[in-house]
Amino acid sequence: MANKKIAAVTMVRNDDFYLRKWVEYYGAQLGKENLYIYFDGTDQVIAPFCEGTYAELVPKIGSQVVEAEKGRLSFLSGKAADLLAGGYDLVIGVDADEFIVVDPKLGLGLVEYLSSLKIRGSVSGLGVDFGQKLGEEPDITEDKPFLQQRHYGQLGTRYTKPSILAKPLRWGSGFHRIKGHNFHIAKDLYLFHFGYFDMKRLEDRFKDKDRLAQGWGKHMEKRSRTIRLVTDKKARDFDKWTKIARRCQTLVRPPYALNKPAMFEAKIIVRIPDRFQNIV
Image (tube, rainbow, N blue to C red; front, side, top):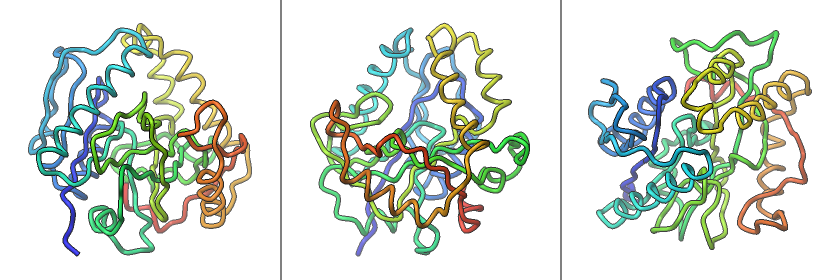
């Protein structure tokens, strides 16, 4: 079977720490020429590590969180549609702190794995939201892979996202749903979220005047809960509980949003197996 042509799109603002890792990971998986990066605001600077990608400064979208998110995802949905019309078979849409990962036990790269799937509209990876186990895991550094420094995450529904499109569709805010469509969680595919996996970085983001002006303070405070959960709760077996979570999220829906997954508000913390440690 021939490999599919796959692009990845994202939008960033003041986020070189994550974007550098995003370019490194998806560039290795898809080829840097298939990465499309949009900088939210013409006051941004395109970093040298983006060389070889398609990187563009665009006028800033919105001034408040809700307004900006709707505008951002409308913009990226349009770009994904253009890419699909222009010859791509699949488009991955994720934030710069999100990584679509194939379980290394399969021995397959991301392109090879996704090319093996029959995707009618979209496909999702099972969401794993990484935290920091305080007292055990030190501050994150840039000189080692993330997964050599962070070993615990929450199996929640927030990051089980329909990130991969096979046809033009409209993402809802934060890529959390496809408007008017259901979702399918692929086996052995994960979305690893690292946005709130380091207490020091989280505290530094509270001080970012640009984000505070957009109303992100409450949001970031809420997301620090993952660190507390990872620190306080006993970690469970990854392979066992990811199977349970995938089955539950496939079958259960919240009554207010039938195209989103649900998991009975369970707060399941797992320890990530060592086989993942060199991937991101």
